[in-house]
Image (cartoon, rainbow, N blue to C red; front, side, top):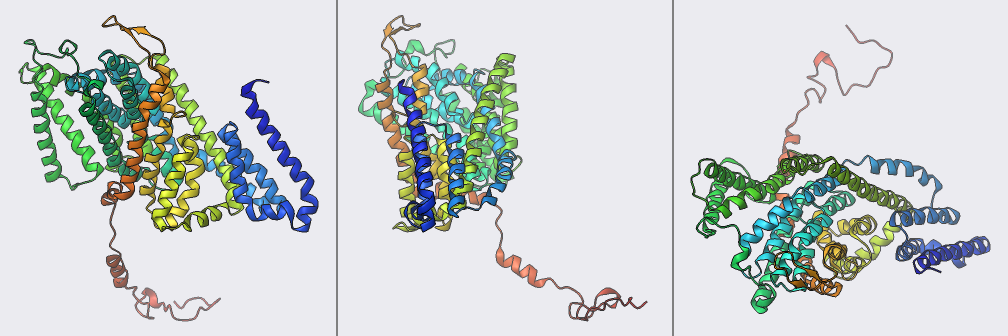
Length: 600
């Protein structure tokens, strides 16, 4: 028998054994109120959850495992009198409600945008230009990968697109100039996973939907943690360059091609333009807007800053002023498209002009225009992106439909109360709850990807967190940072698989230097990921310890003064309420008279 069929056969035998067991024992045991029937009446919820875990570990598709478990235990619950059969009549409405969910419509929009941008040439231009900018310093290429990874995360929101793009473009360059293979692979994989936590992340959309909170608030709450995590990645690279400088050398002079006619790079002109743009943008935001802090202030200030820098560079180029170096002009012109998309998507969401779904639609349209402007837009590209988007969207929808079937039965047998009592009763209150939940999600991430965690585990955790008084946006961001590790866990992390698919598996000849290069082994990719998994865990702890990194989202919310509202209601006077003052001489206190016409 083939090895890949063993899990399926084992699962089938297990299911048949369970069914036969119930068939033999439901009669007498259930009628007598003891045996298996009595055990299941008390423990239906944990048995149902354990059965789901068994089927997932056996390798069955998640959507079908969820739905099959839900229907199987619904029938068992009906037989035991634990589940009312009329609950199943709500199933079509729940499935239709899933398909009618406008929030989830953002998933195909952002996926399509990411796939178009992956092939538009934006990543190549960014990596080449930012690599030239940071190249001469030790670890410069690694800093460039982290910076570009954060930008791609803020424009695409798709991990696969970021990891594959940077793996194809940056990894050969880093290996060419002597970067340690573990450091290079770890930086690329970790920077790609920033798309999980930096808006517009697909994970944050799903988490907001499952927790019943606003996607815009979830985006705003996750913005600062995403930037802090990027800075921590850069801090790790800095430590490596200090302790082991040979692992991340700078680019040699011959590799720096963005020079002026006299051979100078004049990076200081970029610093001058950045400072002028920052002062003007910050002054405008402070003097002419009511925003003072928060993610919306940061995004709008950054967008205005880039617009000012772009105008300066455009005037310098059109009129041949020669005030800016070639590198400064190139950096500004390359940075404009992704930052314009960031404003188009995140800026419009944060300032309240667009919903996340509408922002995703504008981002998809902007990605098409960007690809067209770079002359990369073809019918074949559009077809590939549409097909991939349809596949991912169908994958998400099928899992969500299966989760709806499972949750209907699980809630019907009071499984949510079992989970709530289990978690709320943990020692330590909210702190103990957060510690246990994060350890559990971290361990589950070894075997489940973020969609499975979001659709199976999060709906069970949300009510318990809310009962403990935990803000669900803060809780969602904590889970989002934690779920990043599901992409980086050796040996099952998807980001590692994406990088493995594009990293050289055999010795190859470098096309620039002509030297034979050693391949990147799977072990090097795994070991390179370990420090970044540790950094992600530290970031989870920081978000728990410093909730202000997330809770700033409330600063932009409309604040209501309850005392003022009560005072306004108290001051409202209805004329004639005491029996006089109503027009026409009506008396509200008079008894009703039926059948008698009013006096003329």
